Each structure stands twice: as structure tokens, then as C-alpha cells.
Amino acid sequence: MQELPAMRRVFIHGTGRSGQDAWPRSDGTNADFVSFEPGSTIPEQVATLTAAYSATRVLFHAHSLGAVPAVLAAASDRVDVAGLVLVEPALYDIARGEAPIERHIATVTEARAQAGIGDLQGFWAIFRPLMFDAPFAADRWNAERATAQRWAASNVPWGHAVRVHMMTGIPTLVVTGGWNDEYEIIARKLTRYGARHVVLDGAGHRPQDLPGFLPAAHAFMLRLSN
Image 1 (cartoon, rainbow, N blue to C red):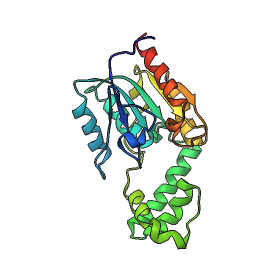
Image 2 (cartoon, one colour):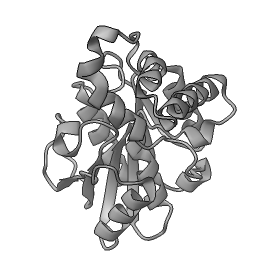
Image 3 (cartoon, one colour):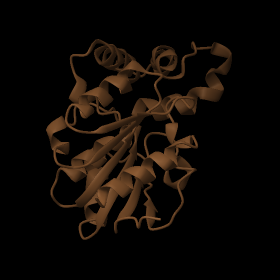
Image 4 (cartoon, rainbow, N blue to C red):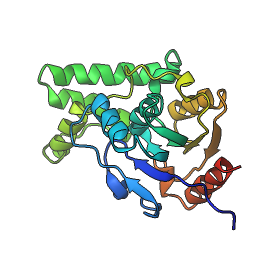
């Protein structure tokens, strides 16, 4: 078996699960599973990564919103990044102007405006159908209020000055689930700059939960040593 290149695998979560719970099929061999502080900003998350890995050669694995601090840390020249494995990366900044991207941003902006004036239920009535493909239901509101509050206060994946050229020269694998135009558009943008793209359908926004994820990531790691 070909020997894997020497590097630390760093797994970076998106919104929701954190730590190893966010990467259930990935083992802990020569790996770290990041858990950002709840409520931390994107700049704070970037600072966490650059402080922890300033003296370590790393392969960042990042899911969804976690791709934003991963790319910004990689572009800072303060981390020796051997490669990026971006799973459904929410790099909305690199795809501005695309209709599905702009629709998503406009809807979230409208929802958060409701939260901003103290109407959390109004926020959830707009946000829930967008993110969970189900309408607001008054009889579930008490049970979902805390979830709505968390989403209303969460970071959004745009406005962070992420640019596709930041990844130039960094070997990148993009894994998407083939279910959402936004992530497929972002993946196509990245492939134009040399990224490899693998589609693993069947798990929606979490293709890292599928059996095919580990072989794809392993094959990418092997290519880094060639």
C-alpha cells in the first residue's frame, strides 16, 4: 500500500454538529476534530486555526460554513496547508451574481431582518422552508424556538471577502451531494481553478456520511505525495 504523505488531518465542522460528531466516518489517526467556541465569529475561527496550526503541515477537511475559515486560514500564509477537502463548501462569496446564490442570500437577509426587529417567529417562518424544506407550523413553534434562535444568531457564509484565487496552488478536492444548485455552482467555480470535484449523492448536505467519502479523500491524499 502506498504510504500517505506526512501531514495532520484537521476536520472543521459547519453549523450544527461539531468535533468528531460532524465527521462520523473519519477516524482519529493523525487527526484533529475542531470544535469552535459557540457563537464565535468567522475571524475568531480563523484565528483559532492559525494559532493551532502555525507550525504544522495540515490537510484541512471542512464542511459547509467551515470552508470559510478554512480557506481564509489557508490564504493567510500562517498555516502550511498541503491541501483542502471541501465538503459542500458554503463559499458564497466566490459565486455572487449567480441566481440561486442571490436568491438564497436575499431570503436569509429578509429572515434575519425579522429577527433583528425582535420577530423570531417571523424569522423562522421565512427561514425554515428555505433550510429545512418544510413550512412553519404553529404547533411546533415552542419546540423549535431554541433552534430558530441559534440559526438567527449564526454566522452567514458571505461577506467574508473569500476569493477563489486564494486557493490557487493549493490542491483541492470538492465533494458535493448533487442535490442543491448552490453547492454545485460553487464546486464548478472551484474546478475552473483546478479543484477536483466528486459528487456523492444520497445524503443531501452531508456526503461525508456516505461510504464513498473515505475512499475519495484517501485517493486525494495519495495524490498529494506524487
